[in-house]
Image 1: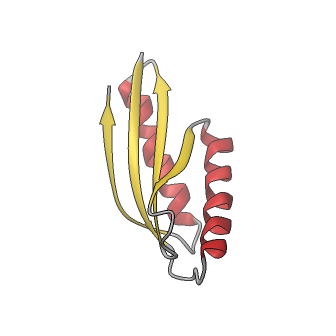
Image 2: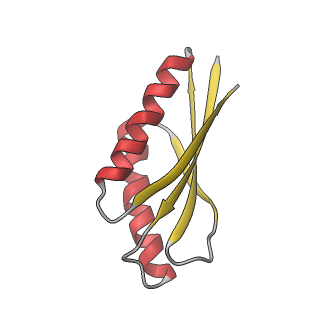
Length: 93
């Protein structure tokens, strides 16, 4: 069994309030969870309007499957349009 964790830093320039930020994050995270069968949640910067840090976790029988899943996750977030990935890092256990 392999476990992968991905920490993704996001910028949401159109957000003018915490409500706007949460609405955008909820939309993109729900889509990613449903499509890729991963766990994802906001883990840092909950009180900032235009920044968010999301944690994504995936479990699989091979590390390469987890790496591909994280790549798909990043692409799906970037395709959202109003959310930009500024940085991400992954760890495997």
